[in-house]
Image (cartoon, one colour):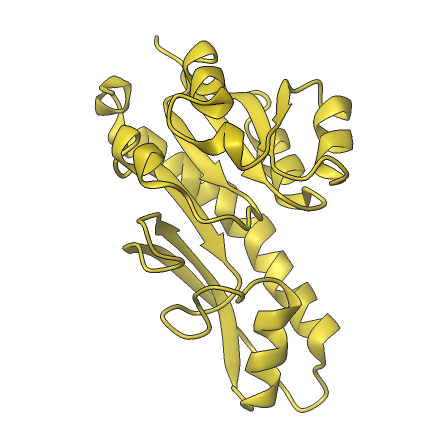
Length: 198
């Protein structure tokens, strides 16, 4: 039985990274091979250490074609990429190398509240200011534009008059933790064995 090697890209505290790693910890078919982070002081690095996951911290130069990131992904035999709070735009060389094998989660119901600068509390603030009645998560494939890839899955939560940015964020995080690992698993098991064709 072949094992799928996942890598997780993150820029922040890494709660989704930890949640995904724990979800797949006892799955013989899906291995978290490494964590990649573009911020040397991000707490996700500490989480990776605690989880005994290999990790790479990289900069913009490393993210170019034939750079450190590409070499590391080859070394780790990565088959699929998960973005878990990663804030940089994915370069075209990486999208071409992993076509429909890069997935992101966005803390809103796309196509609303997507695009450059729309992440974290920025999204929840906009949702609140526009008096939306609901928000949620969107899990989607990654293309060369922020948050414009094909949507795979969405889940919703209601917003009431007592909600603020923090409470909306909490509701959205709960959806992320519940659904992101499940959707990743469904994608990967559906793609088998074609996932090994790079």
